[in-house]
Image (tube, rainbow, N blue to C red; front, side, top):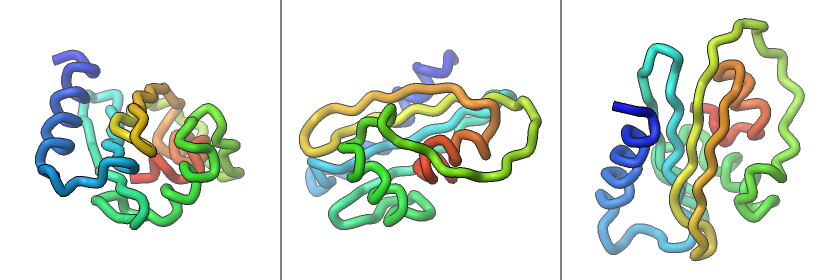
Amino acid sequence: MPFLETVTACALTLACSGGPTAPAGHHLTLTMQEPDGQTSAVVLECEPSGGSHPTPDTACETLTAVAADFAGIAGEQRQCILLYSPVEVQAVGRWQGERVNFQASYANRCVAGAQTSGVFDF
């Protein structure tokens, strides 16, 4: 199954499982696909911070500062191994009632986390 189809199916499953009580304004499904095809996903909810993301407060602060515009994230200095093991990430959902659909590729998991200031640290 191609990456986008897998991600879309995963996002729909996670988003729909929240039911009508899921936060409407700040709810994102974040996915990461490894080179071997393995995909991991977490849910990030903000205001209040929650979901299955391991550090929702940090991720929410980062996204709030840029109004969920991933291109506006400055990233952080972090020492990452120089191993090329590309990952593809995607964020889908809603932020302040607006649709979010972000996709990017990074050299490895560490770089994905560093360049998104922890949003993709899972």
